[in-house]
Length: 312
Ligand SMILES: Cc1ncc(C[n+]2csc(CCOP(=O)(O)OP(=O)(O)O)c2C)c(N)n1
Ligand SMILES: [Mg+2]
Image 1 (cartoon, rainbow, N blue to C red):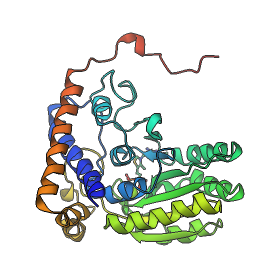
Image 2: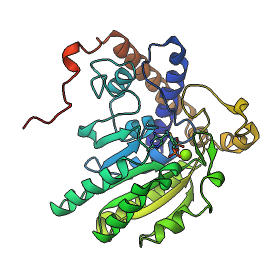
Image 3: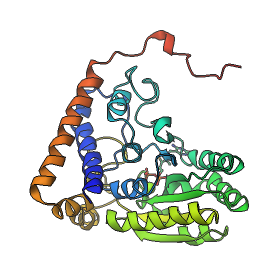
Image 4: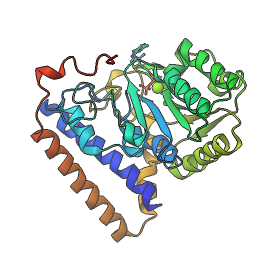
């Protein structure tokens, strides 16, 4: 439990710190915060092994950190520095740490779903036991590539866990105005894979469900599974602030989610001194990572064309 709390709290505090620093303009990248949605990534990654891999979206800080990505390198990436995880060329939306199984996040909605499936195909061909998690938003379900990827994963019986983070909005457009039915799982099931919906407002429940799915994929080799995780984004779509003044949603709608905050509830289950020790270590780590990012150099002009093409 302490592990889960540490992971939840670390992500929450890192993103709050990003939001605090953002107006200084030292962060050179748009930021899509996961505050409120941490339970999905934490519950998932706690169920994965180090050799399992994840593919995510531009709202990817939580996934990167939960899977073990290096905080210094993430912070430096947001600052556009040469020491960043993508050498300062990707920014917040393009986090990667292959050593920890974070194969990439992308600004292009839906684009990492087929990459995850392709990776899983390669694993299967090579007879490896690892599991691939493909994390995407409710908006990605409207992309053709989502449907193509699911049906290919079923056809080839691939070891993929599809995780839809349904936060009910794509930018400012509510789900009900974009999709005729609230039936993401039914559509996934129509391709022939097991699909279930879960309320992702409790990291312990999310973790339990994720662990079952991962176990099934790894042990039974029975092909892909699908989980729709209902969650809620507390901040604006992109940027550090809130956006309840824009009129597309109300503070009343957000309130129950904020009141059920899984991070706070989990923390309350720990003894106060243990929680204080975890919190203090997180603050020290964040301070160190920000200092590292600020003191690191920007990439030089020679970096401009590096890593763009694979050398023959
Ligand atoms: C292929 C593509 N189409 C449109 C966009 C513009 N766009 C950026 S974010 C976004 C919303 C996606 O919503 P969702 O998948 O639910 O993710 P969330 O932001 O809610 O986490 C859209 C449409 C894009 N980046 N890529
Ligand atoms: Mg969404």
